[in-house]
Length: 184
Image 1 (cartoon, rainbow, N blue to C red):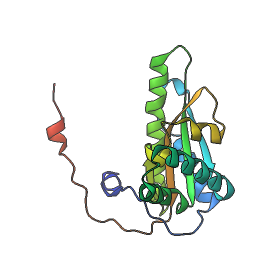
Image 2: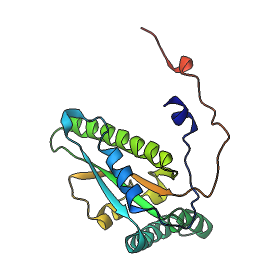
Image 3: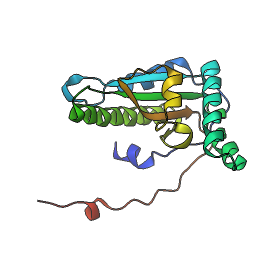
Image 4: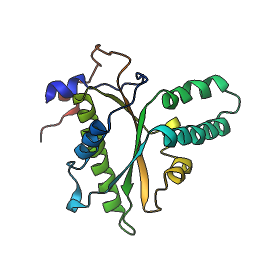
């Protein structure tokens, strides 16, 4: 398991081929085994491919054009993150009305679900990157509205998944745990 964690990488470039439904369902199933407070299972998973992905491209383009009207090169490079991705899964977390603590616990559980999905994707020979800012549209209402999420859901991640078109073998520099640990 430690080796799997060490080799995990954010993959941003994908081959132009579809991900098989069986693999998608395995990734979705992996999410359901994440730890979660009081078994609330607070996640909802929105799968986009084909036409729904084309719709998301329009939403993202409009967002980027409004946000960066004088930076067309930034818009073009940002849009590649979507237009060259065969599968996007948007993950939301349930909001518990009147209970900020439970809502926060749900976000933690959904983050765990995303990590489970990431490790499963890699096991299946797929690459993934978890986007929140920019074209991830997690902090904007446009994607929330597009996917039809309820007011009781908040976006936590936009997962871009596909067959890797890049190989990253260089280990990422990590701060040794000893520098981030206090034994009490």
